[in-house]
Amino acid sequence: MSYNGGCLIGMRGKNCVAIASDRRFGVQALGLTTEFQKIFPVNDKICYGLAGLGTDVQTLSEKFTFKTNMYKLNEEREIGVKTFAHLVSSTLYEKRFGPYYAEPVIVGIEKDGKPFICSMDLIGCINFAEDFVVTGTASEQLYGMCEALWEPELEAEDLFETISQAMLSATNRDALSGWGGVVTVITPDKIITRTLKGRSD
Image 1 (cartoon, rainbow, N blue to C red):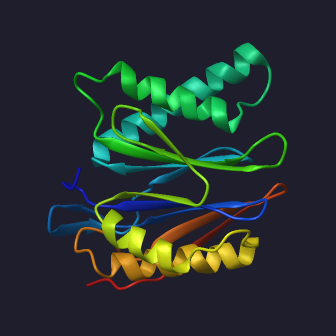
Image 2: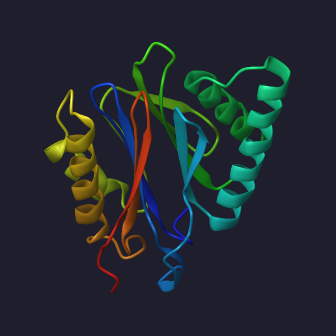
């Protein structure tokens, strides 16, 4: 899980959710690029992130795009965030004897407007949460920062500030992740994506 590095946070606010990832892609201690995509949109209410082995991140993102497109064609409606979480879980569990080395974080707004976040291990065991979820090589540092900074019922701008500070502070203390970050905030009516500038050493 630490071969390419990287980390993710999913965080819940008041009628909004946020997901953040770092931008580094490396091979152990060697940094290769700061443009590696780890957060992927599903529709205007759902985003997910994948942290782990770079090849499996790309494989799974294409697999999930295919499966959500097939769902839309068959059902003639957009997939819901809980349904998508179970789709991801079953896709990972299918390969439990030779798993994909990627741990997903899923965030979204449910049909009734409630925020939803969850994370999974590499065989698809779902961890539902009411506050925040973290994964990746900096997860210990992220837990500490999120426990210190997160508060219930944060508005969208405050949620962005909180998740950004947690991401930058935690990745500064982890050699395998960092080099800035990407934050996506989902509200009932829009998606806002911002890029963070971080230390590149």
